[in-house]
Image (cartoon, rainbow, N blue to C red):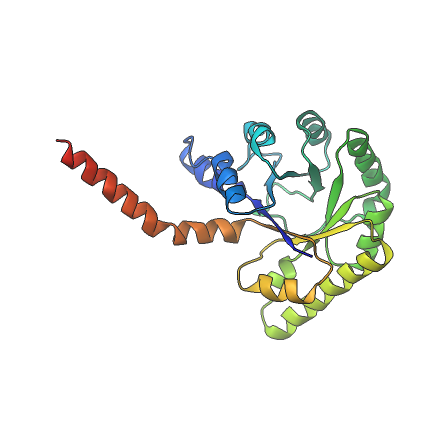
Length: 247
């Protein structure tokens, strides 16, 4: 089974918004990602619109050829947007305005009634739901009970592990949660994401075998900035030289 790569282009929008310009455009970035082999595109439409904006989601819905995954908080505003735009998948995530990035998984077990109703409204609108959860047995079972089509395991504790022993422990937690889902709730697609890099993704894929999808954004965009700098400098140098030649 091939583990699918879904690219989160939020931080292309972060760079755009920092300057207040029209570029780099996350829509253009999504085209390049899919051309390179990404199976889908993920965006997080935050309540404060700190990176992705409504227009981005609307245009991506028209241009993404793979799967468009809309990450969002379980609010009335976001529900209305999702039902209007019709992404291929909605991933519900916890959201706090003061955080820099999502800090942990949803407490599905503690909000089961409310999330079941919310997932039901999305399902009635023809949109399957994934729940972003910590690798915990209770959360896996609650996600299935809520009617989710998928779970996304939060890999932040694994990615940020301060030492090898902690890293192994977090890998074991992820593997146990994925195995439980596969054994008891085979209807759930098992995805993972947060803090993943070229280095730490290898052991994750090797040892957490029920994984079907990975959502990767920040590290991938950061790597692209560095690895693409040489080509960008060469292209600008060529453009300058072309201008000089036309004097």
